[in-house]
Length: 484
Image (cartoon, rainbow, N blue to C red; front, side, top):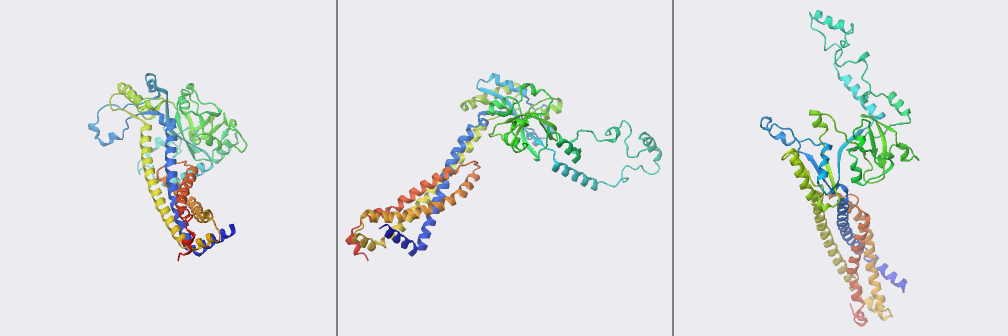
């Protein structure tokens, strides 16, 4: 009987090959769209929760008013006062706000590395500039008749027309370039540096990172896999030190080496040699570095270098608004009105998450509507196919086939169409779901939600496909035999 069932199913698919193929395509499109919508909503909610759990969205950011707004006013109409300049000393405000548990500085920074590629590029640029420079003698030659005026200067330079007079600015003893200028490194200098076991040459062009104060590490919940963080004493020192993220540290390691081997070694950068004192464990901060935030100087230099953003972290996100008001009052007393901007990244993130969730709900509703329409059409077509077999069903029942056997025959046909459509729908849903998520700016979605969406969509489609089997299991054999 099983072989007979298989022959009947095979005949139904081969005799109506085009119809069966269109049914599978309809099921695949419906399941693919619906599972993508379900996965989009699930990933949106999951990503939003994960985002809000990040320490970044449990803090208040304090910054001074930017000077960009002043560009719209004439200079003569601007008030004669200096804008507020924030420094790490203003972190003392945390002591007056009970909800704050950490206060720190986190400024963006970059580390530019020196390697063969960077030196070759700089040499090519210098050669290009030299080729574009005017020929020697075109400039600087004294006008005719003024030779007597230029003679004293020539004598002061020792008779060398190209030498600067003694004591003139811009020169250097012996005519050599000032030492320590990174752009003057040669390939020989780089080879000599690479020969030192304590100096590391990076193959990267640059790395991004942050200048931070020590409490940043406690607020972020990161830990070191090797070495240590820098301390408060390092904030006032002059040595160049850094803590590397896990992935950035791996770029300096030879195969088989451990992160401990990097501690104490120095990285060759445009800013000089930077000593590695720690390597972070694998986590969110893998590809960055951290160096101490140091503030010094005065006047205009102080304004350009010391001005920074301050971050105040709280343990309870429900107290962020209250903390923002308290900090606003403190900084207003310190610097005056409209000098300080208090921002709450969590509130902005919640608005974005709410918008994305609403869009994901709308997309899921539309995709499920499409699946419902496709399932109803599939059920109707299967019913029509079964009606054409009504007489054949009566003959099978007259020959001894039970009602359950007839029901299984039609249920198996619906199952085959649903499974084939589900497999094709999964292939469609993976790229479609990724595109939907990227359009909403969602990263790190899991394929498990897509698989769950395919399963739920297939069950819905199968439930509609089983309706003809349920109806034909109750057919009267005598009526079926008399069917045209």
